[in-house]
Image 1 (cartoon, rainbow, N blue to C red):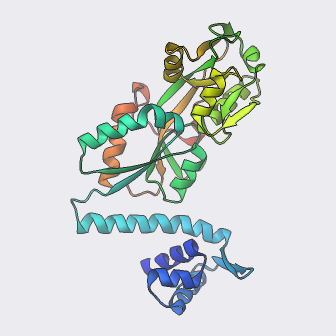
Image 2: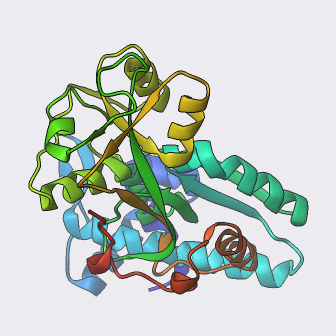
Amino acid sequence: MTIRHFRIFAAVASCESITKAAERLYVTQPTVSVAIREMEEHYGTRFFERISQRLRITEEGRAMLSHVLHLLEQYDEMEKMFRNPDSQGLLRVGTSANVGSGYMAELTAVFLRRYPGMQIKVRVSSADSLEKLLMDNQLDLAVASGAFHSPSIRLKLLFSEPYMAVCAPGHELAGKTVFLREFMGYPLLFREERSGAYEVFQAAVAQAGGLVEPVWESSSQEALLEAARNGLGLTILPLRLAQEEEKKGRLACITIRDFAFRSPVYLACHQHKFISPGMKKFMDFAVERLQVEKETQGEEIPLSKEPLSV
């Protein structure tokens, strides 16, 4: 198999059409058809099938596509590096909402001042979405809180962020110390279920014998803040954000006597991702700026050992 075969395969998977793939690659339709047939014969499986006059990728095709995209990315990176050694290129970095609002802007700004030749494109999304983008090679790496599940994602723990329970200033629990069971008895406001921090919180509460049943779920952090400010329920926020809201008089903190929650913040990338010089600079810089726990410095945390603090 050649790079040409893999480029044709990736184009067909993207276009879901032999004709459109041929147009994109400026080759003939028979050329595309032959390349796909040669790949299927070589690997002894079908990568595409026709359903209702449309070309659909099979499960085997999806598995192959993941490898093909990473192989092509590594090949293109190699070509760019050795044909133009001074070119540092564009970094595509994903981040979760909490990290994006609290750390990513400053991290990116300081990095670009240190390395003015670099370019960074940032995407803020849920941990679930970021994991899919890393798997599909639409992101180079991510700095995100919460849980990642795929064994193909390599993780480096940067730090564990403490969270604080909050409510409206006029709420009956404002400024009080309560037990977890009492806190869970009030209406709860949380990010959507696929949010990394929320998923880790669910697991931590389950370990403590509780069950999270929010009355309000939102992909917007600001929407949850507004709901909490208006007394619609209780939520948890990163400690730094909770303290800022309390200082401004917009929210009040609640201490939970028998429960403490911290969400891990990871540096993540695909295990087969080629680490370019630009990526290496950013990864080292993220560790330098964000990895504040000396005992975990440089430690890669396996998925089976993700910390859940209760």
